[in-house]
View: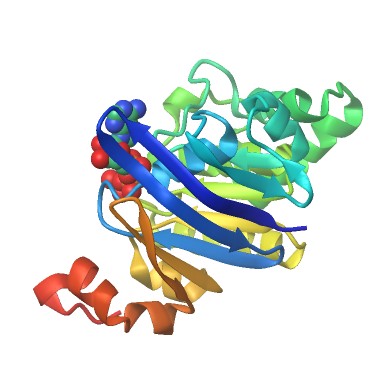
Length: 241
Ligand SMILES: Nc1ncnc2c1ncn2[C@@H]1O[C@H](COP(=O)(O)OP(=O)(O)OP(=O)(O)O)[C@@H](O)[C@H]1O
């Protein structure tokens, strides 16, 4: 099972946000998308998850073409994502929204779903906050709820949009552990990250985007030492990572 993005083009009026982007994300691997602001990273997640239809190209999960299927249908096929702005239900308890996430995807309403939600919340250190409303949690806890919802949806591919940003050290370590566990279970993991240390620690493959184009793909070492990437992304700072 692979996720294949092939020659995807998206334009917003005159602005070409994705200009023929292709990439392959393998199961059991973390693929990191990096690039300057406005490179098209979130737009690519929106295309994969079904919030934007591209002008051309294809997105395949194994043999299935995802384009022209609804976002909900894609979620049921196993594409689950987080949002930079999280999009939790602020007025719903942590436990309930984890259960809802499972029910929305797998359409079961069972004791098993509740037990599974409890296990997931334990894993994410949220058991003490089970009955709290998401709106009352700390930022780091809200991010953990967003991951809990993704785990509950039991997907095959995760799209993580800057999930590690703003986490305290313990929350950050837990995030890395949960992503590594998901990778070991054979999930496809795509993540957008500006934290290049995290990219170095977690990513098996790094894809560098700039102004809608894929300019480099390889290991973190390969991409971070690429001359074009250094010139466009690290600039004169010559940042060491
Ligand atoms: N709905 C939209 N309408 C018009 N322009 C858009 C829309 N969404 C994104 N863009 C533009 O498309 C380009 C790519 O944006 P995108 O959010 O995908 O970049 P990004 O790489 O995710 O950036 P960041 O790292 O800042 O999140 C930007 O120039 C952005 O302003």
